[in-house]
Structures are given as structure tokens and as C-alpha cells.
Image 1: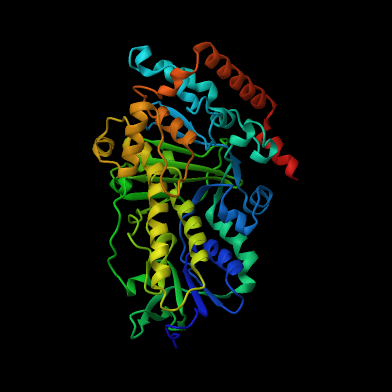
Image 2: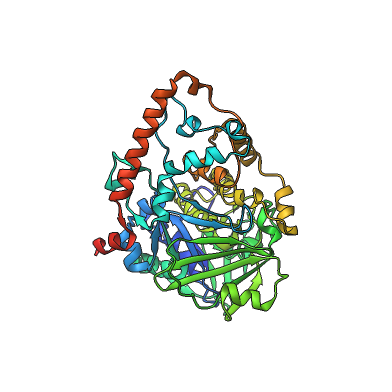
Length: 487
């Protein structure tokens, strides 16, 4: 029976695909009291492979105690310092987006404010971009195939680096399962229905074989349980919804590149994520694509299906929270979905164990969910909305209105090179600066604090910083050599 409202949650059921369920179960297994029973229902429905790229340094990984060596050894991940965006700012355009901490400020102003302004070079921004290039330390290291961790040089430019890992989500799930299955009762099956209690909460779920399982709280990674409470949830518009189909390689394709790459073409966005076992390729597109185009991008053995729906507006309803596939998808570049799952698993762990009434916990979780979703969506949507392609779907995207927060970022950077901050930021100001500049946004004016520093003094400071960056870059080892040292 469902516990009385005054009681603490005593049982939790998680259900969905392994790639969504186990990242949540692994964290809850560590965070929940041992007296809280955990049941994991793993849906074994065959699905195409899925890759992900997430920051190595995150609170989620810290709580799990995961490090780079474990990712490489057990998950076959390919670490890198950045990702490549191709074709978004026009055919042939390429931009490395590398997570990066801030460069040193000068007199309180960001370093890039001291570089040639757009109005100083005829308004086309070429001087600004050329002057900025040597200071893009993390991006240059990524392009050169080098690697290091911030802890390797905490008092050097290495501290700016933001290592990331690209991996097969199913292999990652297997790694996590091995570490937490002892804590859970594990069942295989697909949720086929359920029963609501008199309080309107989910009382039990039924598997396809007929087995009924009761619990106090449900983590739904498929959408089948939450549908008992709301079959048509409100969803938040995603710019990538224009690309309604997704094609994935059945078998990973091997490749030599080590940087994850997102390529925009006339019909959509192709993602290629290198892993130890080969490249995992997916292509989100309009559906108006010839078969031979699929073969060129994802190989001859590929599966095409409807793209996931846009994210729900509220993830926690009653005694059920949607995560992973049940939430929906940001559906754009830079792997926001996997990052959202990790962040929300962390938020959930911080809200549990709850009382069975759990209204306050649901409000707190949904507030954090919306803030996290906004931060990730802004970062992933920027390359789409700032595209400079000529094809109809891309023109439609470029005419679309950005979110209020993304619009403010673009406006303030275009106006005076400033990057504002909002709740639960996903990327540092330096990362935003490099991406917006790389996508063609140029500051029209600059921070007036620049005028308080004599030009000769500013030039000497910039030269000193540049030399430090060059020295650190030259001393960095290659990615392969670095991994070899891990054993």
C-alpha cells in the first residue's frame, strides 16, 4: 500500500532504458538511506547506439567518485578539450568550441575588451577575431590534439582547461550498473500500465508480463509511468524541433578524429562522437533526405525514427519524476540531453528522501529543472539560431526568437562585448565569448575601463599573458601520451 502522507518515502522504482536508468540509480544508490528499497526495471527494447559528450569535472562525477582513468578503462571514452562545429556559420566554416575558464582580467575588464574593436577595422570584425585567436588557449590545445587536466597546473593556464569525455551511453550504463546493482532489485521488462491511488499519486505499475510493482516514488525514464498522471504534458519549444527525424548508425563507424564533431548541412545536423570502439554517428534532419545521403553520413546500416519530443515544462508531478527520454530532448548540438540527465539526477538526490506528500520537493525540483534546462538550451541552441546558412530550414531557425536569456547574451556581447550571468550556468564567460565571436558576433563598442589603462601598459600585459599561454601550450603532451601515463 502507498504510505500515508506523513511518512518518509520507503521505496523507489526506476524504469526505462539502461542508458537513462543507471546514471540515476547509481547516484541514488549512494545517496539514499539503506532502508529505502530500490527497484530498477530495465527496458531491454533494442535501440540504436547513442553517444554523449559531458564535462569530466562536474558535481555529478564528484559525487560518484569517477575520474578520467575509470572513464577510459571501463567506458572506452575518448577525452578531449573541445568539440567542432562545422557549417553553422556558412558552408566551409569550422569552429572549435572548448570549455574554458576566464582569461585574466585587466583593470577589471575582460581581456578581449583590450583587443581591436570592430569599428577599428571597417566594421567587419576581422581585426578583433585575428587578435583574439592567440588567446583561445583551450581551443588551440584541442585543435593540436593535446591534453591535460586543470589539476596538472593549478597556477598556470592549464587551470583554464575544461576536459570532456565522449562515450557510448550504453557502455557507460553498464559500467554504472556494475557498481550499484547490488543495492537494487533489478527486473527486466517494459511498463505497460499502472494504477493511481485515491490521492491521485501512482500506486503501482504493471509490466508487460502482468507483474505489478508498488512503490512510494517513481523515477520514469520512459514516459510510460508519468503518462498515468498526464498523457499530454506541456512542453517547452526547442529550436531543433524543425528537424523531426533522427538517423543513427546501427554499428559505430571507426574514424581517426578525436574531437566530437557536429556538422550542419542542408537538411540537418550530423553528430560524430569518437569512442574507443569507433565513431557513434547520428543525424537529426527534416526527413527530406535521399537514401544515399544517409549512407554518406551514418553508413548503409542506419535506423531512422521520429526525433524525441521537446522537453516537458515540469518534470516532477505527484510522486513521479520524469528523467532522460521521458523528459524529451534539447535535440541540438553539444549533447545537452546527457548533461541534463546528470544534473537532474543530482538535483533529485538532493531532494530525496522526501515525505510522501512531496509537494515542496516537487516545486524545488521543477524550479531547478527549469533553470538547468534554460542554461543548457541556451548553449546548445546558439549555433542553430546564429547560423548563416541559406537553406530554408536554417533560414527559418535564424528568424526565430532566442530565449530571453540567450537574447540578452547576444545583445550585450554585440553591444559591448559583455557576457551576463544567469542561474545554473553551463558554460563559463570565456567559452561563451569564444563561441559567439566564432559564430560571427562582433562587439560594436567596449568596456570603458579599458581607457583607464595606458595603451603601452595594456600591450605589455597582453604580451606577457600570450607568452604564458604559448609556453604552456608547447609543454603540453599529446592526448595519447597523456592517456598512456594513466596506465
